[in-house]
Image 1 (cartoon, rainbow, N blue to C red):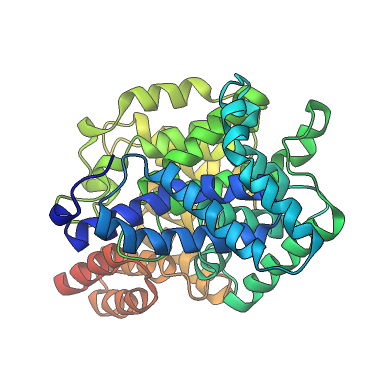
Image 2: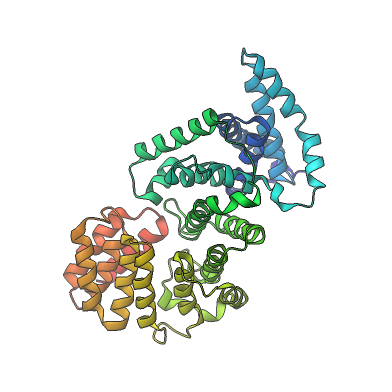
Length: 414
């Protein structure tokens, strides 16, 4: 069933297609990969389906089940592409696609959640034969539909470098015959680290988008949480539980991070009564005692989540947790976050010294939060001229409209 197309403004159709892309891209691509075994064909056919949706939904209305419509359309696009091939294998792949509906009915009767195509996709991408960064990048591309540019920004590398990684990863899967499946239990631990990394970056891209008009892409975060829950049931590892806890503790604040007019609301101005305290309680309960990279990050998030205000937050403990986290993850972003905690615990001058040291290292060149943090600390020390200069630098680097608006407002205040 569809809505009357005469009542469907173009803007609504475009919004519906954009929403469907965020929520359904991974499922459509994962299903086609399973059926055809051809990653490029799956991505190209899915892209064609979304392009077709823009045209058809304007004429016919948005379908009652956009995901099913897109999967069927993508499958038909794949069949058309295969029929144009002059190879013997093309007929076999066409038959596989034509059998797709019956296959889906049989699968829907299976109670085992391991048959989730998107979880299959993650574990296939995270096969140990692939380079670690290639595993994560490929999953973000195929599962979340992130562009090569978005993934490159998440990794802080040039776009051509990321394109090469994606190409090599797909070639390796094809040439090595890597199976498209969730591995047996004895092989799960060796893939866990990469799978957790994928879910972590997927959640982050939804929680704080690297580009575009929206700071928050809710469907990406929700999908990451769904898959993390599934992974915890499949493999109740402490770090898997910690990652799920981390996601829940951050997601609990989602409703307060952007104001009614789309403006960024910083932690100190968020209405804590509107935080999802059920999620906070669940996240705290999930936290294991075993320290690890995700456990420490979740512990930091818990410090924020349970505090009544920014002023009563245990910043000294947060700084100590960041110190411990640096032992596991010596990342410049972690060092920047630690500098903020030190500034809150010991004063802005102490934090500013750490930020300047980090800036001098060049490790975060092009990362807008470095000058943005420096600007805030300079403002707090009374250096308005230096703060304005740093805000302008951050403004040039920020990739989302929401963040640019926030930085411009801070600059205007000065």
